[in-house]
View 1 (cartoon, rainbow over the protein chains, first blue to last red):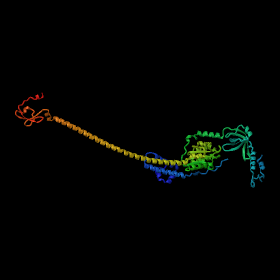
View 2 (view 1 turned 180 degrees about the vertical axis):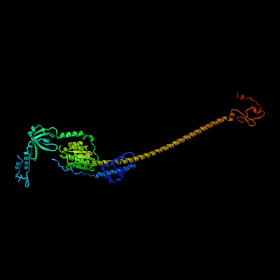
View 3 (view 1 turned 180 degrees about the horizontal axis):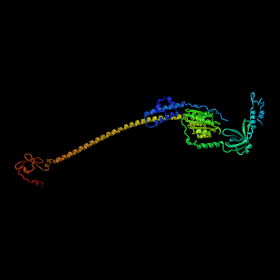
View 4 (view 1 turned 90 degrees about the vertical axis):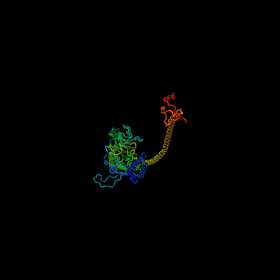
Length: 84
Length: 431
């Protein structure tokens, strides 16, 4: 799972290549930290910026998503015809 | 009737040397369909066994057209044959064929030239005992249930956001196309890993098991879908095969089984972590809807914004509160000032009181002093006699006759001279 330091180190492009569910989970955690008590305004602003970047990465992922299909070795496909 | 004789009657021109082990290849003879079917029929008619057979099987899809005859399919796990039960025989029959009924039939096999099929012409039909497909199904179901394969507690939750989804199905046909269509529309973020297999026929069960095991060997799969389109009970039978059911139960990751239509329930369905009514439904159950995910993500961003604004507002409220608190300190200063002033007042009053008290003391002392003054005594009528050497005369013996005395009274003094002295006489004054 991406932590704050990694998030700062990743470019927007790199961030958008992370698994979608991970992005959403980190975004969720960021929002929860923002909503939780006991953090200062400076920290809030930093978290908020993280949130915006994560959100943008999610949007990019959703926009560019294309179903990937791979097929395991075709042995076993022979004889696909129904048997009489 | 020998086959050779029949052959002779069917061909317009017999082969030039049919008896030769190495016949010279003639130009191909072209048959009419009718001729072909007639030859097949004659072949079948010539077979003594086919003319008088007992067959056990399961009745499938019997139809009862207005003619009064009955037509149905007779089948077992692997094969099927068409059967005809004409009105006369049907009337005499011990049982009326129903779908799924296991029967023993006597009759003969003939070709039906009109359609180019061969059929079993039934003259006797009786119900058979156990051993039909349904009984097999029930027996295996009970056995596997007893082995714990279908227990609810074994069922694992399906990954909410799968990254890699394995699919076992036939790569040809509608099912695979339906699954990819659903996922393309619904969750294009996923990677699909197809493990192709045949899904019907006698080789299907081991092939399905192999396809499943190929997927089980894959790392990082989140979900597996095992799917097949609709079909007859026999078509779906491999999904009731014990090997397949056990393979499903042993899935490396949560597995969704979607076989046939809503009403088709196979033993593989029971063993799955999740049963889907159809292959498309399996694809839907395996994935979240990407359009809803977009909403989820936007909602998260909105929550972040609200939280930040809330935090800022909270800070502002805090600062305001601090400011109010500071302002609130001002009345305290006033109060302190007031208190100081009060104290000063009280001090002043205390000092005043003390001064007043002193003054009254002084005054009272003054009075006392005044009382003690010889003048006051003189005023009361006493007198002081002073001798010539200015001593106060207290003893008559201290003076002699003829000595001058000065007598001081309240107002003025008297110059006098002693006439005579006497030791007594003090008592007279007091009497």
